[in-house]
Image: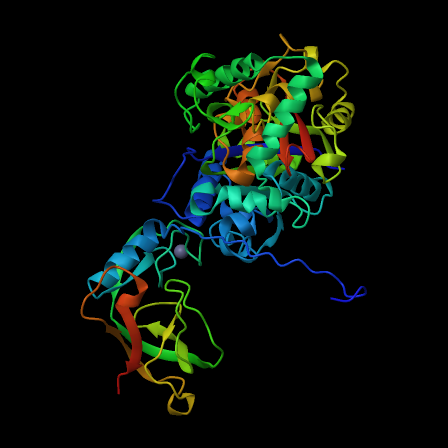
Length: 366
Length: 152
Ligand SMILES: [Zn+2]
C-alpha cells in the first residue's frame, strides 16, 4: 500500500447561521482555500470524495448538487453519507491503492437550512422509538445519565468538561462559540435534555472542511515546487480504525465508550502506538455533549488528566457543522502537527446517535 | 384487519427547509426584481452562465463577474408537464398541462429552464426565439419571471 500524505486542510469559519452562503458556496470556499494553500492546481486533482446528508441538505443525492462547487466534474467522484472522518477512509484508500495520486475529501453541513431535531428524530425506529419524541439531544441526555450513574459521578463533571471546551473554543477563530465560560456559567442555563444543559451540548453549525491527500511522490513534487523543504514537514495518515455498534439504544451500554476502544486499538496498532497517553501529542474528538467529551477521552485510551493536548480547538462543543465535524477534527490535528506543535496526534469522528459508529485516525509528522 | 394482514405503520414527518440562495443566487433574484437577467462570467474561459454561480463549469475558477444578459434567447428543448404537481413555494397545485423549456439567453454558454407561455408542444419548435416576461409588481423571487414567450 502507498503511504498517504495530507498535503493540506482548510475549513470555513463555522457559525450558527451562514445565510449569505449556499452550501455549495461553503464547499467551494474550502476547496479553493486548500488548493491555494498547497499550490496544487485543480487539474492535478485525480479524485474527489464528498460527505453530505440528503436529509440535511434537503436534496436527494446531495453529493451531486455540490459536484460543480468541489470541482469534481469530469473526475472520478464518490460520496460517503456519514461524518467526514469516514469519508477520509474512502479517500485514503484510493491513494493507498496506488490508483490515484491526489484525492480531495470535502464535507459540508448547514444546520440552519433544515430542522436538525426533526431530521435526527427520523433516524429512530418509526414503530417503537419515534412516538416517544426522541432526537439526537434526547439520546445524549440518556447517555449522560447512564454515564454519570455508572461511575457515581455528579452533574458538576459535565459542567467542568463543558467549561473547558468553551474556553478552548474561545481562542479558535473558526469556532462558533467564541466566549470563555466558567463551570458556574455552564451549569446555570436551561436543561435541554436532563442532565444536559444547552451549553453542555454541541451547537448546530454551518460550515465546511476540505482535506487534500496525496501519495508520497506527489507530496515531494508539491513540496519541491512550493520551495518548501521536501519531506521534513510531511504529515502522514498512519493508522485508522472503524467500528460500528448495535443500532438500538437499548442494545448498547450507553454509559461506556461502546465500540470506540476497538476503533482506537486498530488505529494505534497500525501506527505502532502502545501507550496513547504518552505517545500522542494532540487529540481531537467529536464530542456532541460534555458527557461525550469525557467518555470519548476514556474510549481513546487517554488518562483523565495529563496526556496529549485535549481538544485544543474546543472539539465539536465549539462548532458542529454536520458531517464536516469529524473532518474538522482531522484538519485541526493536521494544522497543529504541520506547525510543529507535536509529532503524533489522534482525530476522532462519529456517526449515528450517541456514538453508534466511530472512526479514529492517527496522524504523524515525519 | 384479519390476523394474516401485514401491519404497516403510517408516519407523516414534516420537514421544511430554508435554502440559502447564496451570494450569487441572491444577486440573480434581486436582478429579477429589477426585471433583469443576470449571469456570472469567467474571463479565462471565457464563459457566461445563467443563473450565476461561484464555480466556473469550464475551469473551476471563481466566477468574479456578474453581468446582465439580454432577456431573450433561443429555445433548445421543451416538454409538457401533464401530472398534478404541488408548487413547493406555495403548496398550491399548478394547473396542468403546461410546457417548460430550456433557453439559451443571448451571450450565455448554458441553458436556463423555465415555464413557457405556450401550453401546447405542437406549437413549439427547437431554435425558435423566446423572450422573458416579467410581472408588473416584482419582489425579488422566481415568480417575478412569469414565463418565456415566443418572440417572433
Ligand atoms: Zn472558467
